[in-house]
Amino acid sequence: MTSWFRLVPLLACGALVSACAAGAGRLAAQPVSALRLETHLRFLASDALAGRMTGTPGYAAAAEYVASQLRLAGIEPGGTQGYLQPVPYAVASLDVDRSAVRLLRKGRARTLQFKKEWISGADVLRERSAVRAPAVFVGHGVSAPELGHDDYAGVDVRGKIAVIVLGAPKKLAVNPRAYYSKTTVKEAAAVAHGAVGLVLLRDAHFSKIPWEHIANNAGRIPSMLWVSAEGKAADYFPQNRGSAVFSETAGALLFEGARKSYAEVMAADAAGEALPTFALPGEVEIDRRGTVSRQSSPNVVGVLRGSDPTLAGEYVVYTAHLDHLGTGAPVNGDAIYNGAYDNALGVAMLLETARVLAAAPPRRSVLFVAVGGEERGLQGSDYFGHYPTVPVRQLVATINLDMPLVLFPLADVVAFGSEHSTLGAAIDEAARAEGLKLSPDPVPEEVLFIRSDQYSFVRHGVPSVFLTAGSTSTDPAIDGGEQIRQFRKTHYHQPSDDLSLPVHWPSAEAFARANVRIGTIVGNADQRPRWHPGNFWGEQFGKGTVTAP
Image 1: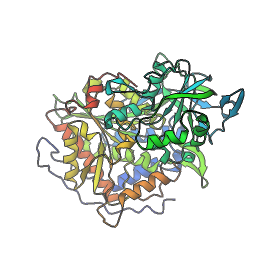
Image 2: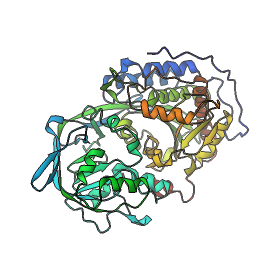
Image 3: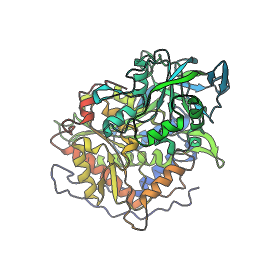
Image 4: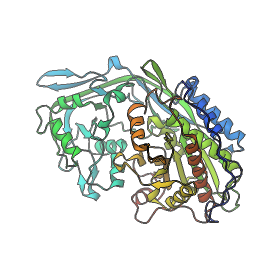
């Protein structure tokens, strides 16, 4: 399984000097090591950890490994229990045999097939959540009157099930579109308008992912939400008594006899046209049953103290999610979803960054946070954002590492969110110092800025980026973009994201060095990063208070 992996000779890396004294400064004499990166990757993505699902023994072993590596690097404990920050979770597993979704019309019921036509998680606080009500199609379910768009205008969804297309209207600017694409934002809007249930339809973008890939592990992977000391679950809406995601087949059945067919609605969405709103025939019944429990599973937190007595009370934050999908439905006989690229390599990069920075601490302190629950909806990072181990106002920037696809000789990097704050200048400088170009978001329609752990810090007003490898190769014979597309189509969230996949280690080293440089630049700068004036995210969250899901 690991026969493809061959260690490449380490690149010579002496002390490097930036042209800007207030910027990168002198990097640590410790070189970034491909051998260390590969060692971390081999352990974290090994079959022994069984896919590192949050709350499992494999995840606990991975957390202990990260804590031990931070200790060996000279990084101090930064959690609430040494290096660990236990996160309390409400957990629920769907009882598939006792759960059902039905379409009811003219006294007749059509029971939809689980996995083929619908999927859902269990309610994390209720063993049974059930709803039967008329359904209303409300387009993208976006209520943004301040932007001149409100799918609920003139629509009565009180006591009804809101049927919503994922994504957001293409007429909205990229940043508001990303914000209003969040399913928690959609759910909050639906219940605020009186809806008692929710049916989600895949939009043109999400339909690119085969339904079988999404449905394969339905009923196997538990639902998880972190809970407060008072027992309240995060982003939980008790008014919503039933939710389900419908396949294209079920969507077509749901819209039979309606003013517009499912195909017409999806065609309008793909074309970027305004979606109509209208009542759907009959009623929808969603009856979910499951087992509810509580678990604790930790984030791992380390702190490198800054060298400047004045600035050491401020923190640059590095994050990477430690969890993946655990074990699930076998694919070609393999049931372990190792998550080698997603995100064992990101954690390896975080550990190597910690080791190298420890040899030359910047003026500001640095937090290294390996979080759990990312695959369950950014749960671990969201908990840390609400209960940071240092005051949130002292967090100056977050650099999140998630699935750096160094599959080929790398010519560029992408930092989702770099255009929103002065943090972008530091990333550009760091990338150029490694001979890499900082490229803009290549897929703004995928709204990736809200889909990884940096968003949990953005919600608290912290300028943040999601740093990953770009899609351009230094080898003109290699189509990097096509390799990334093939990875997403074939390996993303599949057992084949394992140690058999190639890693271009010289590029991994360069990426890691650029990552170290970012922390050095931001950590040594006289001024902390700032949101650009008028920036959507700064205006939405710049006060440091979470105002919406």
